[in-house]
Amino acid sequence: MSQEPQTRIPATYMRGGTSKGVFFSLQDLPGRAQVPGPARDALLLRVIGSPDPYGKHTDGMGGATSSTSKCVIISKSVQPGHDVDYLYGQVSIDSAFVDWSGNCGNLSTAVGPFAIANGFIEPERLPQDGTFAVRVWQANIGKTIVVHVPIAGGEVQETGDFELDGVTFPAAEIVLEFIEPADEGEGGGAMFPTGNLVDELEVPGVGTLKATMINAGIPTIFVNAADIGYTGSELQDAINGDAKALAMFETVRAHGAMRMGLIGDASEAAQRQHTPKVAFVAPPADYRSSSGKTVHAADTDLLVRALSMGKLHHAMMGTAAVAIGTAAAIPGTLVNLAAGGGERSAVRFGHPSGTLRVGAEARQVDGEWTVTKAIMSRSARVLMEGAVRVPGDAF
Picture (cartoon, rainbow, N blue to C red):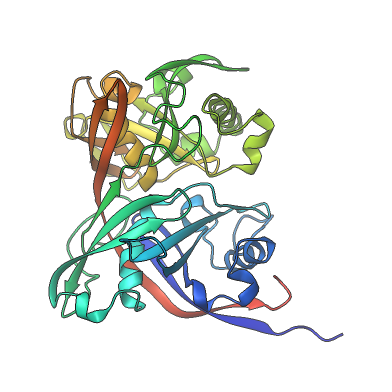
């Protein structure tokens, strides 16, 4: 019986923030995968190595965590005033599913460098030295991201001394601006889809929890750590090794998604694994990070832990950081209260790997809260470039 040979597809393996993924230019994909649909999903699943019942991604490019099971497709933008369109797929590890419902804020960092290095920006537009603002259209959610990429000698500067907790080595600093990140077009079309800064969320088997549910960066459900038996200083093993805890968080997520109008029934949450996120917050406290470094209470405004794809994240998702910064800027949310209340334009929060600062410009117009932009610094670099190979009959 003859076997179909492998297909060779140009690709770049990149780190962006505390995530990494496989980047493709749209025109390099096989024809049937250049459009949304089963062929594209099957291709990306095979590239990553999913579904993998062993949870290792041995036969693919994935890293068997939510932070490393990602694919990105970049194309010349069809949106006026933008350079590239950025489409993000979160690939499930143990099921044949690619979630297109949200963005990856961390990999957004790498979109700018990829666009420049792969000819999406005309060379004459680039400075010899300095920074270049790549205007990105985030196609999953219909939002603008401005990626300020450092340039040296007319090319992307990747090396530098900027340190990012959750990333082992320093690199060049890249500033991200998430423009008008609130409201992803779902859940009632508002930053706070329920109309409240804090809701009473009834969760079967858990109880009634105070919750701030927000559409900013990515739909996120915030609850108080103390209300679910945690301190906010937990590391991954404390949550991810506890099947009962993971089931509890998924139940909270499902019922929060219903209240946000993202799904009609709790059973639908399984087909929407990437969004919404669920996170828990607490006031500042000393703790030891996953690297062994002591994070002092005086160095943070609050503590936040967030789950992604059903597991506690090792640091913080970039889009969730936008949600944190936005909620912190609005007096009365659980995030704002955990940080001490009052008005603020930036917040530094503690996560399992250390700390992160994010700023947000929020204002109230006709009784409705809006956010003009959220800002944070990350880094990115190319890990490998060339081509991935996928069995021709896999998609």
